[in-house]
Every structure is written in C-alpha cells, then in structure tokens.
Image (tube, rainbow, N blue to C red):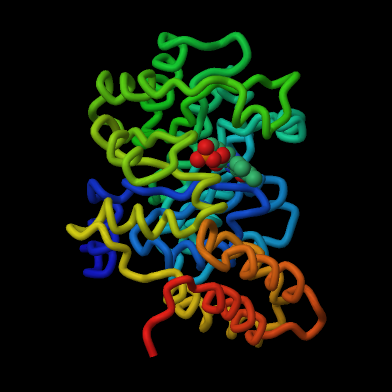
Length: 345
Ligand SMILES: Cc1cc2nc3c(=O)[nH]c(=O)nc-3n(C[C@H](O)[C@H](O)[C@H](O)COP(=O)(O)O)c2cc1C
C-alpha cells in the first residue's frame, strides 16, 4: 500500500495541469539558482534542468550536477545521451535526487552534441530512442519524457514525425515536448537552429489530434499570455524558453492567467525580488558568489522604468569581491528612483 505522501505526489504528477506551463531546459541558464528564481515567479510551472550528459554524471561530480532545492518541485532532469544502459543509470540517479520526471534530449543540434551521438541526431533512429526510453523506464518510477524537434536534416514532414512519436510512444513514453521546427545538423549554429527553420505549430496540433491519449507540450517562439491560451486550445502544455529567461515577469503573468481565475499576478516585481532574498542570503552564507545568482534576474524589470539601472547595478557590482545582499537593495533603488508615478506623500 503506497504511503499517503506517495499517493499525493502521484496525484500531483498525473493531474491534467502538470505540464500546462513548463520552463525549457537551457544550458548555462536554467541552473538551480535560476530555477529557484523561476519557481517564485511561477509557483505551478514545471521547471527543467540544463541538459546533463550521461558522461558528466557517470564520470563527474554527481552532486554538483543534480543537487536541487526542495522548493524547485515539480522539476525535471533533462539527460543527454544515447546509450540505454548509461541513460538508465542516470535516470535512476535522477530519481534518487528527487526529480519528478526524467526527460531525454532529442532536440539539441550543437556539434558537440552530435559527436557524442545525442540530441537531435537521435531522431534519425526512432528505435534507438524507443530502446533508451524502455531502459530508462525500467530504472525509474518517474515519468520518462522526450523533447524533440519536428524533423532533422532531410527527415521532415508529418509522416516522419508521426512515425517517430508512434515508435517512441510504443516504448511507454506518454509525454512529448515538441519544439515546433526542424533542426539542421550542419550549416547552422545552435542559435540559428532556434531561429532559422520555420515554426510549424499546426503539425504539433495534429499530433495531439491523432494521439489524444498522449500528452503533447508545444515549444518554440511562445511569448505572452494570449499565445499560451491559444496553444492550450490545441495541446496539453506550453514550454517557454528564451522569453522566460529574458523577461522572467512574463512567467508571473502566465502563472496568473493559466492557473488562477484572476489574471493579475500574485506578486509584483519587487515582491518577487523580496521573496528571492532568503534564497540569496542562504547561498551567500554557503559561499556562492553573488553574481552566479543574480545573473539570472537581470531581466526582472525589463521594459519597466528603471529596468536598465537595475540591470546595470547588478552587472557592475555583483561580481565584485565580497558583494552581498546590499547590491540587491542598490539595484532596486534604481527602479524606485525612476518611478514615474510616485505615490503622493
Ligand atoms: C541558451 C539556450 C540553451 C539551451 N539549452 C538546451 C538544452 O540544454 N536542452 C534542450 O533540450 N534545449 C535547449 N535549448 C532549447 C530550448 O529548450 C527551447 O527548445 C528553444 O529555446 C525554443 O524555445 P523558445 O523559443 O521558447 O526559446 C536551449 C536554448 C537556449 C536559448
């Protein structure tokens, strides 16, 4: 008989809303400092780690790669790799560290990743991905999901992507996160591969129509509440990447629109910063340099009066030796000083 806490967790994981709003895995960006900040912006969003390769986990410092804060849940470990045994071992480690989901990266087009045979190149061999999913599912009770593109190189078109999803679903993958464009493995940089191949949202919607039993999460170029609402008419979830990082307050707006009756965010920007302070203080006390934490919050006041001053103070002062919590106050003062609608005295 599972314990009550386990049952509760299962219910949370299985609810229809569990993947409604996701924050994308982004290398060098969505580290644990960033995720703790995004968690405050969007309490119900599902957060993804940066991709962690099987090699890094099996030969490297597991704790450094996998440690997470209790407040981060629901949080997903994204793995990069192609060897089913290694992926299974890493999925097991992910569960031991408390991750709520294990995701396999089949979308990353960078050269470095191609040489290791993982990322988008895996889409060329759906049965390899299916084998990896099978092995990972045997190793963990957590959901195993796949993030992928619509195609890779000359492999494209609806029949291709349908065949890929069908093969991987047959191995027990129930959730697919689809970056709605193909990837070119040579000739385009990773950045260009996020911009040049055109987005094809209707193809993602069609996957959901044809496989209503699967959970389909759409990703790529989604900004703003209205776009989220429109996508959610067709699919189960939206995954937000660059917009979430560059303009983190958009997550607070999406949280309010997608999870509450009221469209007003629960917290304003200053309150979000305030809520982040305890985490920052604890990290400073543990010896983390301030800039490693604050580099993720530079966009909090983006587009707001004083937003540039906020960013400038953090960029200039947070990396100085001994920089502490007072730098946050100085940055916030820039915003307050620039307030064009000061309250009447
Ligand atoms: C800096 C950066 C790093 C990324 N790293 C990863 C990664 O580690 N794993 C992955 O699956 N996708 C990665 N991506 C792709 C994003 O997860 C997402 O699919 C892509 O940015 C499209 O979504 P967007 O238009 O909302 O940004 C990265 C994107 C960026 C901008």
